[in-house]
Amino acid sequence: MSAVIIPARIGSTRFPAKVLALIDGVPMVVLTAMQAVQSKADKVIVTSDSEEVLNLFKDIKEVSTVLTSSEIPTGTDRVASIAKSINDDVIINLQSDEPFIDYKLIDQLIDELEVDSSNFKMITAATLFKDINDVSNPSYVKVIFDIHNIALYFSRSVIPYNRDNIEGVSYYKHIGIYGYRRDFLFWILSLPRTSLEISENLEQLRVLESGHNIKVIKTDYNPISVDTEEDLIIANKYSKSIRGK
Image (cartoon, rainbow, N blue to C red):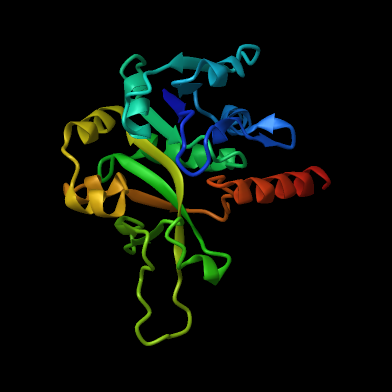
């Protein structure tokens, strides 16, 4: 059994109430949830500290909602608080600012964790940067991984560093989606925050620093995440372009 849990906190430093922002007339969090509904997950749950957010789903029977405290520190903590009340073995943590997420990518993460979790209990995704100018932007998290697609490191800095400017170096953008085996999710949150996690402000580094693997699925899906009002303009243009096809 599997569940997609979408943490949708109303507060945002750079873009307050961004989960309510309209993309082609539809709140962003609703678009994200409806993409998840198309996946093979057995349930989709939106959790928020805002009744306004949850009320968006009162007439959408495919999506369950849970009100959680605004005091919960991270999205992972918010997901885990819901996971404790369900029995699903596979938990997908989907960020609410992924309104165009490919549901087939969600299926891939679920399949990987259901078929073989002996070497890894956590999974995420990455895609090649389409614009080389974006690689230096610290808002975009980069990831490098080994020949078995096991993550070596995540960073806001440029990795790998191309010292001699050789051609053909690949740069991968991390996508804001995680899959966990249920018990492993709780184990992560039992650990104290680590030095690299604090330095980069990336929760996944806690797992690597603790000696556990994170598998990375490579995908052609190129996310249009919404972190700023400028991103919202881009998202609306993209939505109109695919609607017109």
